[in-house]
Length: 138
Image (cartoon, rainbow, N blue to C red; front, side, top):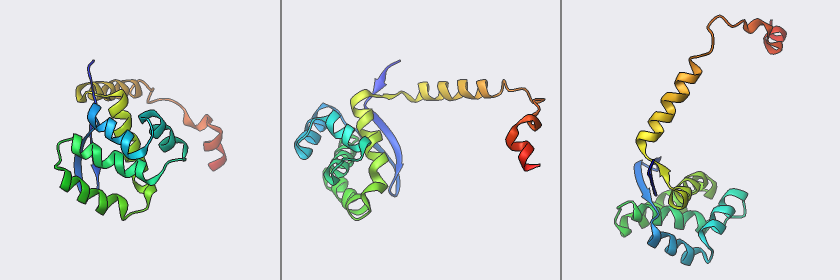
């Protein structure tokens, strides 16, 4: 399985391609005055700074192929003019993909189909009436 540092997410007004390659990760470091795993840790543990969120998203858009002026406009419109927490999970997903890679689309589909196959092994004749929550509801 190969892994890419890019990820496509439904964000703002559409689906956007984000990528933090080496150069963008270096720019995140400069913008936040912290290493990328420090920034990721801050995003995950709640000690983030607003520039952690906005820098990751803006530079992810640029790395994903968007022109810098358009990335800046989108960041100002959908990040900097909104409550920071609205974009926290997006920033985490972008930075994780940049640092650890994101699974290729084929691998994601394969995993989804394996999960569906596992879920279908549940017997349709299972007796859910023995569930204590079901018994209380009846």
